[in-house]
Length: 147
Image (cartoon, rainbow, N blue to C red):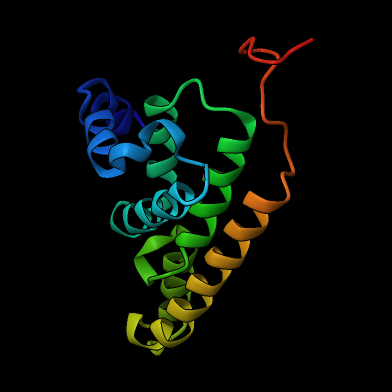
């Protein structure tokens, strides 16, 4: 967490997200930009793991709405299951299996289920979140709600 916090202070994550999101940077959870945003989170969650990605997003988008954070939370959680490396839980299970002599829980065995189930879950979940908002569009704490 200290390393990620220090990395956030460099401004690199903010610049990366601005570049990666392009014209969608200001409306990242509006359709169709939300699907691009989910793709970016998915890729990053499987390169750097989902917890550091969410921590970087917290520094990159400090004034996001509750709905934005609902989308980030959902996407990063599900995206971590795309590959074996995307989630610490997957690595813990593989390590525990190896400790008892079961070396069959590998990336190659995880991928045939992990990839299609993650993509389907992300698509359906993102569609539902963008269609039926389960959290408020505004934040009283940030002062952007009409009272």
